[in-house]
Amino acid sequence: MTTQRMHVLLVGGAGYVGSQMGALLADQGAQVTTLDNLCGGHRDAVLHGRFIEGDLADLALLSQVLAHGQFDAVMHFASFIQVGESVRHPARYYRNNVVNTLNLLQCMVEAGVKRFIFSSTAAIFGEPAYTPIDEVHPRQPLNAYGRSKLMVEQMLEAASGRWEMAPAIRCKRSSIPPAR
Image (cartoon, rainbow, N blue to C red; front, top):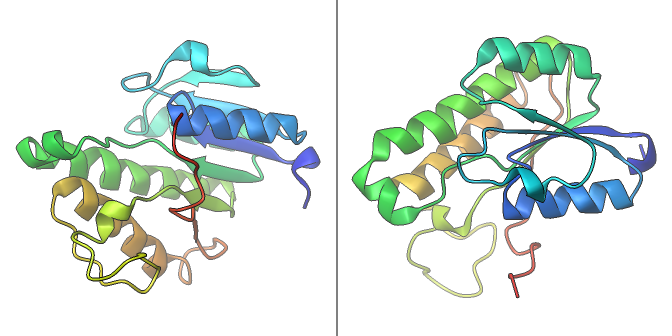
């Protein structure tokens, strides 16, 4: 399937990485719909496609968007990412990063959307045992941010064979160039 015929739902697409992905997808000819609650992103960062302001905690909205969108894939960049805050408010991170991802996956399954790309973090590895860190490095996150992302990765690994979804694809952590 080429991106020229794809319709992609970009959750968290008003943040830096998500908005860059939206621009790349649009440049490749994909139809892009962005869903973002704007708590960490900016409406003016969404320069391509349709924008829906909404939250992954809103199951009714998620179901409606996914049921009517005819999406070929969902790309997930919506998460809380502040390490210090995750230490002070871990439940907030588990609720947003884990529970809301489960909401998204549930609604995707109900809508028949089978392709999913999840943006994770190197924080799942904790203190490096060696460098460069690779995909087989021990996973020992040091904070709720890293643990919440690892929980989602584990959830995807466990669910990909049981739910009617294609195996989960993680964004390669080293594939996003640093901000300049």
